[in-house]
Length: 276
Image 1 (cartoon, helix red, strand yellow):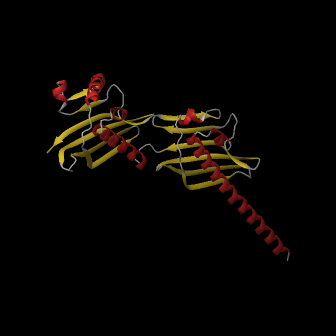
Image 2: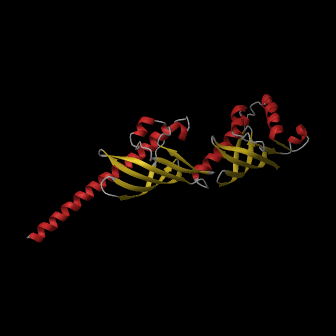
């Protein structure tokens, strides 16, 4: 009888411990999702409610050129910029290691807009609430769907802006780096050479934008191929121009090279070869 009572007691303790762990895991997931959503939306008070405010707390993440560390006194705008964004983080492969009832080490895969990252959080329980003490984010800046979609959007926006005569939008897709360059044969008549770069490209674009008018044409892309490595991307494709009746009026083989800047992907090189 005594053995049965001891066994029952152990089972009850185990069940209570399991229930507590499950509740803690759920609370931790809620806290880390809240912190991410609030951070990108620049909701400082909501963010701070689940983050420990002390000198030893920090946030670290990698970027395209190395890494960055932010102290507990860093504001959301200093980390995430001034534009609020609504995100819905998806957590996968979540693992927990508890160090007693008030500390836990958590790792998980996170997806934002299909952009993957490896995440680490050190959690502490304060007054019954789980809060983030330390965080590390390791982003995948190489070939992935998020970056591929972002590159293609720049190319499509630049092309449509040209045909719709939206000069400011067109130029916003280009880098202002001094080595930005265009290469195509029809520059020969205007410049004496089939390319323009740096200051010559800027002055040519300034003059050309003043004469830009809607073409009335649409385009379609085929044989598209994109490669991304860190802060550089390049894409090749065949582009057809169609008139209002849907008849092909021109066909070109094109290449774009882009670099990742703080505001997003920007074109630094364009090359065009006419096709029959």
